[in-house]
Length: 419
Image 1 (cartoon, rainbow, N blue to C red):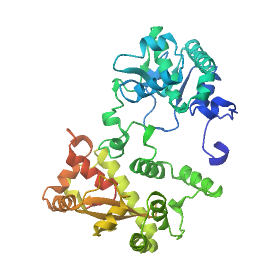
Image 2: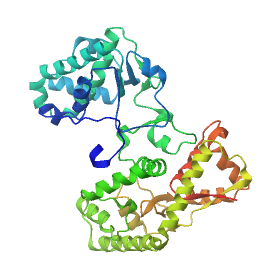
Image 3: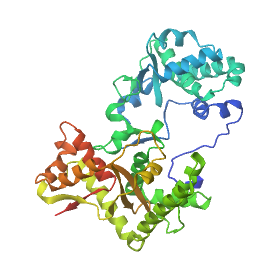
Image 4: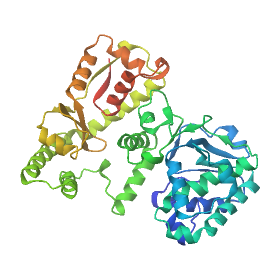
């Protein structure tokens, strides 16, 4: 990673991870990394983003974790798989993790501490658990489920059995994975500055990926360009800073062909739509550099609002993006665009917004009622005050309206202008 991306790590080591376990379990390299530590440590998953230093309490704690959690759905599914596969669990897991309704655990997004003797026993118990059950694990059809068992359940069971105190980043117990305000889709349009984000299962979430792109570009432009350059050199498509005009319009068409039996008429209809969208994107290319600057300015404006650095409603205003276009299309085409979703309802339109940083046209399916609501909102006399109230110190109680405004700003549908 350091040689490839030239990132400024203090130290790094290349470790070879071979064998069945590395193929079976995505977190096995983490386990072997823990095993190699000779001094107190805190391991932070690579999908965690932090805007403030690790709290001093965690640095000094004997043992740490991201949070304590209990779940009655997914973890119960895992436990049923354990019984089906005839996997033998340690008694301390059965006693302290498995309840009548909930299964308790620690989230290992952050894990480690100063109690190195305990952590070494923890690693040894993981290796013993996997070795003892290797025969049945080899035959298991859903091996990936066992990552949470030996990394998280075992940690919870051992610490509870030995009466060890675990200092957590989040102090509340999370039930059924409901992270509330710490849920990634909520965090990406947060009205206040973030301190911590663990992406977890949201790696395919569009807003999450955009949020990371925008923040990397804003906070670490040099390193971000290095990453993109390195990816491009090894053949990974990185269109963000490219001026490549190769059309991507056939991607959705190919996906639909693989998923459904498109008629000739449907193929022609979709192809015509994609051509129009591609032409719309191309109409902005000559001004793309300037539009990128405007988009980056929007990102800075949001940060200022989040930090309450703008407090005068008379110095800002909201307006529809200059790269926004409302598209009316036939019901048959709309049905194709949402991949013939059973949840699709009629009376909807398409919003196109050119995204200069990503050099693509973002596409949103809205109801006409929602479009009308947005237009009426922007005509309100106190629209600028509503914008201020959606961010920063003015955000006393969040609301659906605040979230809607922030989503429109994040998606580039609404622009914020200084007067």
